[in-house]
Amino acid sequence: MKIIAIHISSMVVLLLFLTASSFAEVNYTSSAHGDNGEGVSRGDLQDNYVTGNCAHCHEQHASMDSVTHAANESLLFSATDSDVVIYSTASNFCFQCHSSAGGVENYDYSATFGSLILSGDSAVAVDSSGATQPSSILDAFNATHGHNLSDVYQYAINNPTLFPSFKAGSNSCTVCHDPHVARRNHSDPTDATLSVISLPDEHGDLFGDGDGDGLSSDGDEGSSVSERMSRWAVAPEYVAPFNEADAVDTPDYNTFCLYCHNEAVATTESYPLHFGSVSGYVLPIDWFDIAGDTGDGNQTGTYVVPGDKHGLNIATGNAAIEAPFGDPNDDSNLENDFILSCTNCHEAHGSDNDYMHRRVINGRPLGVIISGVTSALGQHCFPCHEEDSTIRPNGTMKWKDTHHGGPTASNNDNPYSVNDHSGQCDYCHGSSDQQSVDFPIACEECHYHGSYVDEFDKYSPEGIAQGVKYVTPDNSPYRRKTF
Ligand code: HEC
Ligand code: HEC
Ligand code: HEC
Ligand code: HEC
Ligand code: HEC
Ligand code: HEC
Ligand code: HEC
Ligand code: HEC
Image 1: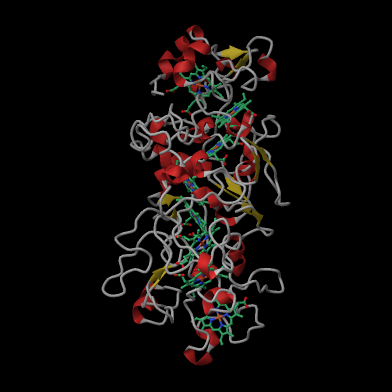
Image 2: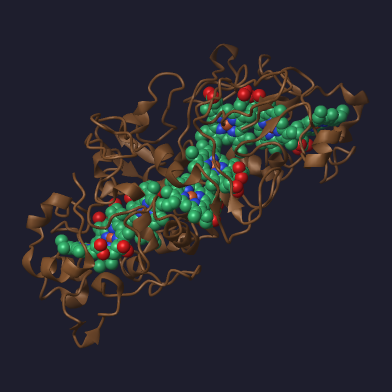
């Protein structure tokens, strides 16, 4: 599908002389909004315009029913305030319909794409988490942690080369979506041709639909599968987590999210700071760089830190990961060569968990809200990692065998040794008393995007100067990525 450049000046003409069906060039008729059964339809216009007609969003006269909307961007029936961060039906044009008041229901990734009960070619989405599930896009953005639409607006408007069709007054949802072509993916979550997303520099084209028409940056030129996670079919392989669509039916969210997140992005939100993070920015995500280094890192000379092991880089030795990746309790099935998708862990719009973490990961409801710098953060590692089933009184996992070694998986290449450091537990732990609430160490001291350990730890002059929080492993390799 080729992009048709349309300018606001010609829009009135287009609206008057083009019927919806002659607009098939931009795929409007097969889009969710243009569908003549399920598409756009505002109650007050139903008598005059068929379902799917452009007029349900654009008003070709300066006023309709004596209400003037002419001042709105692109003659839309409602305005968007790109500066607010607590959203209401009136604050964003799209929320006029995509809210419970507006009547269009949508669920989060955890429900629609992450909790599928697959049967044959069709799929039913169920919510199994028991946690609060947003039931509209407005609810998702108003969850505790969401993509800040004002920051998204600023990012797009300040980077015109990356966002060629975004202009002053544009709606921030249209950075990721083109409302003229987005399709009804939730009607069959295992059919990626029903994509809802467009890359910002390929507005007018769907990303993930696999039509092989790639224009510039999306890498799908001539191939039906390369916009999908199936582009990683050989090691490191993408394996769909439990109850999710197969790789071949899942858009390549890595390419999509990294369109913005391969560089630092300014944010007005505040996040828990860890080593290397900077207030006012979310850090670049290094997902594809193996830098001539598969996991362990150079053990001598300067450590050129490679990309994340959850990305293209591979695990060190073995990773004790749950099915469908492996089996943490079977030494012959500890694997180390997978690539994940951003949406395996994150929601795209928002969630009550820190960092928009999903409520349901790898088919398992987390059971708690992930918030703050805390060892409870491990609850979102648990759906995929387990070596140690011991739990704390509050019900969260201890993760002792993972780090100290233990009986469950003899082959677990644990980094630390409990007998080193003269038995001084507080060399690493926050207290020497195991009963103290300060005893467990917060996971984020060592695990986050980009994290690693090397010999310059929190006891070395170099580490102290940099403010690192990690401790060098007792067991080799001492330089390794920890995410
Ligand atoms: C779901 C609501 C919706 C429907 C239905 C819709 N549009 Fe749009 N349209 C938008 C939005 C939102 C924008 C503004 C995009 C932005 O923020 O930059 C827009 C922008 C436009 C523009 C201006 C592009 C520019 O460069 O400024 C034209 C022309 C247009 N639409 C034509 C149409 C036509 C023709 C139809 C029917 C075939 C249609 N639209 C149906 C929401 C809609
Ligand atoms: C940062 C990119 C991004 C922004 C900004 C964004 N979305 Fe999305 N949206 C996505 C992705 C990715 C998906 C597909 C995965 C999913 O449904 O969670 C999606 C899915 C959707 C869906 C379909 C959900 C379903 O049930 O299939 C709707 C509707 C939607 N978005 C509307 C919106 C609206 C309205 C806004 C603005 C208020 C918006 N989006 C802003 C990335 C974005
Ligand atoms: C006039 C009402 C209306 C407005 C305004 C509107 N939408 Fe929609 N939207 C709908 C309807 C109706 C559907 C189809 C719902 C369904 O299939 O269950 C839909 C579907 C979608 C989908 C398809 C995904 C899916 O599976 O549900 C996306 C993406 C989407 N809208 C994004 C947007 C964005 C972005 C905007 C603002 C630029 C917007 N919509 C504005 C009514 C609207
Ligand atoms: C969606 C599943 C999933 C989730 C959630 C997950 N991981 Fe992983 N993790 C994996 C997979 C799969 C690998 C193996 C990667 C590879 O093969 O390169 C891995 C590898 C690792 C490794 C490298 C192990 C080694 O031996 O080199 C570390 C460290 C790790 N994960 C930590 C975490 C932490 C900490 C969390 C929670 C904040 C977490 N993971 C959440 C799936 C997951
Ligand atoms: C295994 C689960 C997992 C996967 C897969 C994953 N993330 Fe994350 N993400 C996390 C965790 C845990 C954090 C919080 C710690 C941190 O800031 O790195 C986080 C934080 C972030 C942040 C905030 C960073 C900051 O500076 O505060 C961004 C942006 C992000 N992730 C984007 C991505 C993108 C883009 C992808 C895909 C290329 C991705 N994530 C894949 C678990 C994951
Ligand atoms: C159009 C650019 C763009 C795209 C595409 C994009 N993001 Fe973001 N993202 C941003 C901006 C801007 C921020 C900073 C504003 C904020 O903190 O919400 C951000 C912040 C984040 C954060 C930290 C904020 C939080 O609330 O936890 C995470 C995590 C994140 N993005 C994940 C993703 C994932 C996953 C995808 C793909 C589904 C994605 N992003 C796609 C622009 C983008
Ligand atoms: C070289 C670093 C290091 C030393 C020394 C160390 N530990 Fe740990 N230990 C860890 C790490 C890392 C974890 C995993 C993070 C966490 O849960 O605290 C851990 C976890 C644990 C846990 C589970 C945490 C919990 O929730 O209660 C226990 C119990 C534990 N260690 C006992 C000990 C004891 C007893 C000693 C002293 C004899 C000791 N450790 C010394 C690194 C160390
Ligand atoms: C003092 C630093 C430190 C802290 C704190 C820490 N870890 Fe680790 N963790 C490591 C190192 C080092 C590795 C080894 C990475 C590797 O396998 O190459 C590791 C490995 C892991 C792995 C991968 C195990 C595998 O199968 O290879 C998981 C999962 C994990 N940690 C989870 C956690 C969780 C959850 C917490 C918080 C409760 C935590 N860690 C706290 C340093 C730490």
